[in-house]
Length: 279
Length: 316
Image (cartoon, rainbow over all chains, first blue to last red; front, side, top):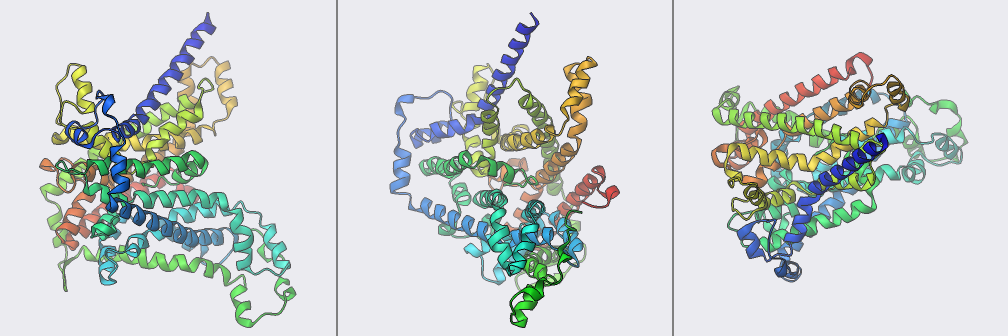
C-alpha cells in the first residue's frame, strides 16, 4: 500500500520535472518551428501556438544562405572578435592565475585584494570613459575597440588561480633540475595540465563575447562592422520586412552554441557557473 | 595557505644549470618571473579598468563637451535626481526584487527535486533547463517579442483567449512590460542558478538525512532543518549576484523597446546612462548616474561580505 503510494508520487515528480523542462525548452522549439514559417506570415501573426503546418518550408534558410550577405558579415565579425577575445584573455589571465598560485612574491596579497576590489566596479561606470578613450585612439568601429575591454578578465584570474593551486608542484622542481626555464615549465608542463580550466574559461569568454551587447552597441557604428547581436537587434523593428533574416539568423546564431554545448557540457557548466557572469 | 609550498628548497638549482647570459639569468630568477607573468595583466588592468574607473568618477563632476571640459562641482548630481531617474530607479528596483526572489526560491525547489534519487533522466533535465542560458538576450528577447505580440494570434494571447481571458498589449502596460523583462531574465538564468544549488546540495552529509529519518522527521522538516542551513552560503552568493546583475540590467529592456519605451515603463538605470551619456552625448551626467550605480553595487557587495563572514576570517 505504502509502496504504491510512493510509486505514484515518484511518477508525479518525474512528470512534473518533464513538464518544467518542456516549458524551458518551449521558446527554443517555437523558434525552430517558426523559422520554417513564411516570414510575412510570421511578421503578421507573431509566434503562434496554432498555425498551418502545411506551409512550413525552408525558404528563410534558402534566402539567408543565398542573398543575405550582410548577415554573414556580422557572423564573421562575431567569430573573429570572439576568437581573438578568447586567445588574448586566456593568455593574460592564465599566466596571472598560475603565478598567484605557484609563486611567492612581494605584493601578491595586495595585488589579489586589488583585483577583488576592482571586480566589484560595474562595467557601466567604465563604459563612458572607455568610449572616450576609443574615440581618442580612433578605435571606434574597429574590432580592437570592441574586444579590448574584454581581455581584462578578473573572474578568469580567480578561476585559474584556484585550478593552479591543485597542480603538482613537484614537477616544477624536477624540471628545474633538468635545466628548464620558468617559462619552459609554464608553457611546456603546467599549461597543458591546465587544459580543463582553459576549456571552461574559453567557453565563458567566448560565449560572453558572442552574446555581448552593450559595449559593441556603443563602439560599433557601421552596418558591416556589426556583430550578430547588434545586427539582429537592428532588424527588431515592428515595421521590418526582414523577418526572414531575423528568425533564420537567430537560429543560425544559437545552433552552433547548442551543438558545442552537447559535446562540451562539462566545460560549459563549469565555465558559466563561475562567479555568475552575465553573458 | 596552500601556496606556501617550499619553493626555496633547493637554492643551488641556479648554479647547477648550464651557464647563461646574465640577462637571461635575471629574467629566469624566481624573484623576477612572477612579476613578468603578472605584468601583461596589470598593464591592461590599469589602462582598461583602473584608469577608466577613476576617469569616470572625475567625469561625473565635469561637463564634457567636445574640446571643452569644465569642472561643474555637484551640478550633474543635482540634475540626476529628477523624476525620470526616479522612474528608472523604481523600475530597476522592482525588477531586482522580482528576479531575485524568483531566481532564488524556484531554483532551490527544483534543485532539491532534481537531486532526489527518484528522479530519472537527471542529465537530460539539467541540460534542458540550462539550455536557455546559451541564447543571447537579443535572440531570447526576439522570441519573447514574437510570442508576446499584441495580436490575438501570438502565443501568449492565444493561451489567454483559450482560457477565456482578454488579449493583452504586452509591451504597452507597465505591469506586463515588467512581466516580460522578468520572465526573460528568469527563463535565461533559472538553469544556471539550479546548478549552483545542485553543487551545494552535494555538500550535505547523507548521514544527517538518515539521522533525521530515524528521528521521524517529515520531508519538509528535513528540508528546513538539514538542507537549508547547508545552502546558506550559496544562497547569499546567488542573491548577491542576482541583485548586482539586476541593477546592471539593460538588454532585457532594450530588446523590447530599443531606446524608448512608452511612458518609460522599461527604462532602467543603465538604460538611462546609455540614453544620456551616449545618445544625448552628455557624458558628465551619464557618469554621475554611473557613480550612483556603483555606490549601490558596492553597498550590496559589502553586505554580502559581512553576511558571509569575510571580515571575521580575515582571509578569502
